[in-house]
Length: 256
Length: 303
Image (tube, rainbow over the protein chains, first blue to last red):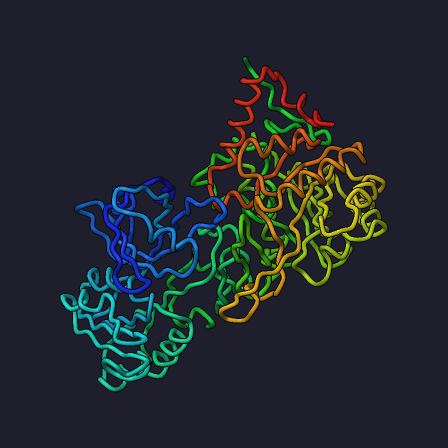
């Protein structure tokens, strides 16, 4: 039996982190107990014209207080609806979903780009090894950056060069000569492509967290597939389901 | 008051008139965390072809107002894996009928799958001649009455199970297709499949789906579907499985009253994985409240 649940849960806090990015804590014992870093939840809208659940990565897990933190960007009507909710409101949620990261390595390089940064926070907390965090931003709006400092060295790249290395996360890794034995990454597909190439070049293991438009979130509808090197367990055609077989894959497993 | 919820579709008895729309529910395994599959009237599987199909590039889905468009492209493992894995899985739920949705790129493809299923323990076949998302096959067979009749005959010659033809709404007059299927010997009809649609991402100046077009489903299409079920019910004698945007028991009852003997729930599963059981329960409650002893008494009651 799966440990997935679907239920209405209470929002214990809703805070605007920066322009267009919000942080929500939700309270539920089952979710908090079962969730692992790198998994996600599906949030359902109250507005009936928005039928599909929104997949949101898990940013932090607080088992003691039985809460989960979700940090998300407002990109459409659904996430806009969530951003207008307040502490005390209830929200329908299904989760935890997906496989999550495999905790491994002795010296890890965690790479987050944009809204791929939040899931790296719980991972940084969970890893039992030396952690280095490389965060890619557009500009000097460095959301969540300071929250990583207790867990390891933090390196920043910005597209406009306002803070840290000008360029992308790989530019920063090269400039600062960041060394490690494993990479964990979440971010836009072009970034993941760059991370995969870098990992191959350096002979490093890399776990990548992918994103795609989803409908069911549980592996039934086959909307969110990615091309895989090996045949998938469902269709046997090299199309792995990001929601169920992923969202985390080893770099060599997937074609980006 | 006890209400009879059993229905008989082309000689196959279902415990209640609710199944799932092909493609929204896999073969049920993924939903079994939320739904006791034994409680469903039937499980209608994702379309299965003679060989594995890769499906379309992503993005394959996009939400639209009150609905969604999809262009999955009938990704499926082919009949060999399906027969070995999915049929035994579904046989674990003896109270639920098994309807296998069949797809193909050519008449020969469809025939091969139907022949392979002849000796499998499945209850009914649903022939998908209406998928708008594959270039060859699918809808090509569903938009011309002569082709509908011809493929129906081919299926009937080979099938050992009752044959349900699934019709496309993307036609000028759906009753022509329904009559052609009936003339070809169809035992039942499923309608409607999705309506061909398009969404444009204005910020990226591109199509929301890699396939450009996709099939529109969800409550946005329900009035069209109810109208078509009503029209087809007036035009043919064979039973109809009605579908298109059912979100709740009241929606399902609309289809029943328009002339459907059973209903399929599709997109709503994505919104609420438990919706099928809620619809069954809600229909039963409606009957109890309104003194209806048999759900079949409501079929086509609105003329």
